[in-house]
Image 1 (cartoon, rainbow over the protein chains, first blue to last red):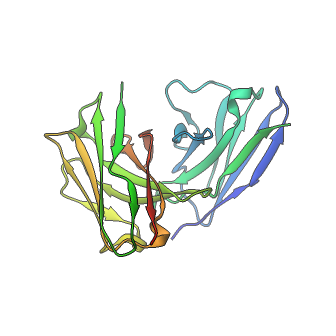
Image 2 (cartoon, helix red, strand yellow; image 1 turned 90 degrees about the vertical axis):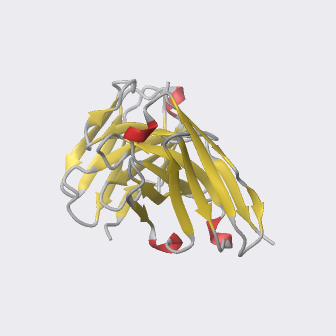
Length: 105
Length: 119
C-alpha cells in the first residue's frame, strides 16, 4: 500500500504570512492527490484536487503543487479563518496524511 | 445545494451491530459513487468503504472487510453502512462523502455521526 507522510504535524504562523504544508508518498502517485481543510468541530472540505486544481469556491490564496512523490499546499497571506487542520489524500487506496494543525502565532 | 445528513450513531457494546444512514439531496444521487470515511477522536481521517453509483461494486479497507457492509437505495437517495461485530477501535465520527464524478477524491462531506463502541 502507498503510505503518505505529511509534515509538519503542527504549525504556528502570523496573519499575512505564507505557509507551506508537505506530503510525501512512498511511491509515485502521478498527481493523484487532494488536499482538505477541517476547521475545529466541522467536517473536512475539499480545497485542491489533482495536486494543483482549485475546488469551486476556494479562495485563490490556496494553491497546490508537486509531482511524483512530493506535493505541497501553500497558503498565501494567512487569514484568521484559515486556522484548521489540513490533510492530504492520495487516490490509489484513499490513504490520508496524518494532518497538519495550523494555528495563529 | 449538496447536502449529506448522517444518522444512526450512538453507544454500542463490543460485538454488537449498528446501521448508519446518510440522506442525500441537491444532486442526482444515482450518478455518484459514495463513501464512508471515519475519524477517531483527535486522530486523522481513514477511508472505510466505497460503493459505485449503481451499487454493483463495493470496496472496503482491510480492517472492516467481512464486518461492515456499504449499500445504497437510489430511489431514496440514501447511503447506508451496516456495522457488525463492532470493536473498540471502530469508535470514531463517521462521515458520508461524495466521490467527485468519476474521481477518487471526495468533493462533499456530511456533518458526521459519532459511533462509540464501549462496554
